[in-house]
Length: 251
Image: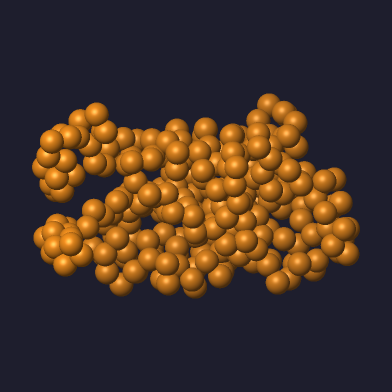
């Protein structure tokens, strides 16, 4: 039976699922945790595409720019045309204070140029600017983050006002690239609301913060994935007498 099975499978092309790639730092890496924003997006897109987590805790835009060609083939504009969308979510580490956290700090102008370079690399891989969504760093709640820093033996190494400068640079870079942007720094502080509820430790997202990101990101993402078909038949539509007739046919 094994040789027959191998022969049958060899006649049919492997199904290539479209992808939504989440590219960012720890806020992206942690997004697949329970009730995380990435997990929620993946749930919405089940059976339509793969949501791929490429979050890298502690990374900044400088390292992301260098690494991206190892994650996506940036030398072949046709290689990754199955990519429906990419989120680019850096800045929370770039905006660290130069004198307190020089390892992660990236100067503001370089940060902006790095984002634009990432956009060009994605374009060289066939991912057009209209399929890229930039996400700004969220606001920083300094009292809570200072406690985290002290526990690790260091002084407060970020300021909310500086995070705001990087958020503004992200918005401007997205506009110059022709991409949409989710401005978390502004939205989470809109109308003077208590944005600390969106953060678990002053920097990373709480459950409410994850819900906030998921809701607002979906508003931007939905139009990019609306036309993706449901992959493989609904179970009730499978011909029980001849399941091969629909399960092995090309969509």
